[in-house]
Length: 130
Image (cartoon, rainbow, N blue to C red; front, side, top):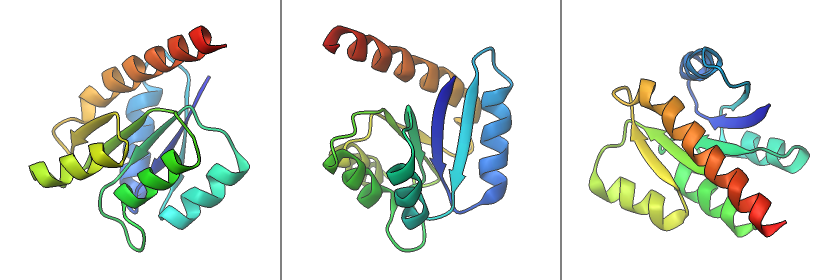
């Protein structure tokens, strides 16, 4: 079972992504957080295998949260899933430590493939480093 934290201020988007991922063969547990502060609280209490972040959120934005996650030494994959489509937005996300950047809504059904790929790579790295 893979634990995923999806940080997104729209509960409808969290529900939709949870549905898409849970429709697959893998067992994904998608937990939502509406703000970066809520995400930080959840990260402090739990371990997640992968993070999905929106770029724009109230308060701390997705790139700042990504930097915070990487700053605490968490190497779990981070995927941005956002409507921010400018190259500058993508560059900022990658500079902050993102592993992948997908755009809403066009990449919705590609996200499962990306999540599987990143989790597989992450598992291999953890096994090799163990």
